[in-house]
Length: 55
Image 1 (cartoon, rainbow, N blue to C red):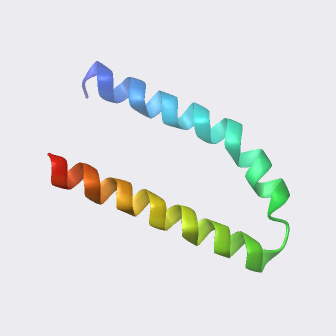
Image 2 (cartoon, rainbow, N blue to C red):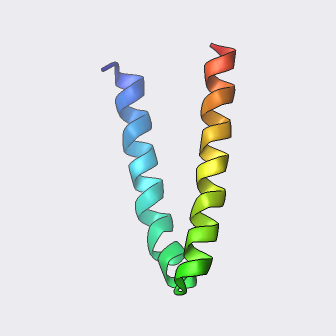
């Protein structure tokens, strides 16, 4: 892995560590949690597709 890729992974893990507790505490109901998780999954997939198309 290149240094840039390693730094990106470290940055994403740090952001996840900061956001995850708040995300879990606000989504205490399973239905709401699954809805929000699916929205985030769609957003991530769109970003991945856009990055793939650009490259």
